[in-house]
Amino acid sequence: MKAVYIDTYGGPEEIKFGEMDDPTPAKGEVLIRVAAASVNPVDWKIREGRLKLFSGRNFPMILGTEVAGTVEEVGEGVTSLAPGNRVFAGLSHKGGGYAERVCADQSKVIQIPVELPLGEASTLAVAGLTPMQAFTLHYHVQPGDEVLVNGGSGGVGTYAIQIAKILGARVTAVCSARNAALVKQLGADEVIDYNTEDFRDRRNAFDVILDAAANAFFPGAKACLKKGGMLIKLNLSLSAFIRGKWSVLFSTKKYRMILVKNRSEDLQWMIDHVISGKIQVVIDRTYSLEEARKAHEYSQSGRARGKLVLKTGAV
Image (tube, rainbow, N blue to C red):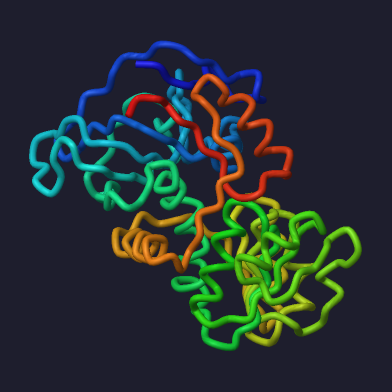
């Protein structure tokens, strides 16, 4: 099969495209013929070695943490899925998604209806679930809450705005002026152009801040949180963790660094809301597998409006 992989951690130049052995499903696994793989910031952070504690050092390493496609084969003990089923899967930090085929534990795979395009489905398991769980598992957003999404026009941000609105919040999105129309169309009640205003200057304004832009830190952001408010960060960083935990000891405000959990009930919630039209999947650009390096470079530029997707051509 064709796949995108790295032989060592590093920059985009380390990305290679070539032939790899087809995987074989073990007990409890399914073999998925991949149609589309979502490109997430976590993918290039894994590539750079920032998350080697989770991804390990098993090279060559195929990148990619979420996919959609068709079940090709099932391993021993799999009864809930069958060849031909349309599915998506959230993979672990060990990756495997940037390939024509990937094996996944049946617990990480969920069947999707024909109404949901596979390209859109490939973006739900990481970029969609992250804000959904941030607003339901970590901070329980209630109607009337003031939610700030820092990085509102990106892959996670576009989902976060819509999910917060479904939960009844008033949403302020931080992005550039060129993306203001997009985030307003997705439901943002107010837009802060980061080129003309620093959201940190607003005091006691927000119940929860979701930092999808990875540039808000608790010592600087806590002043704009209400009492009992929470800053949620998505990028795992030891320095940010230490600074946040130290500051929160002396504050009534909260700080969380989160990783997405693969929960089938949450995935089903996302599917239902996309199918019903309550959540719009925003895809900026689509690439072929061979163009994975370009996709990573564009993702790292910070200019993406919504999601980036790799199409394998396999389905």
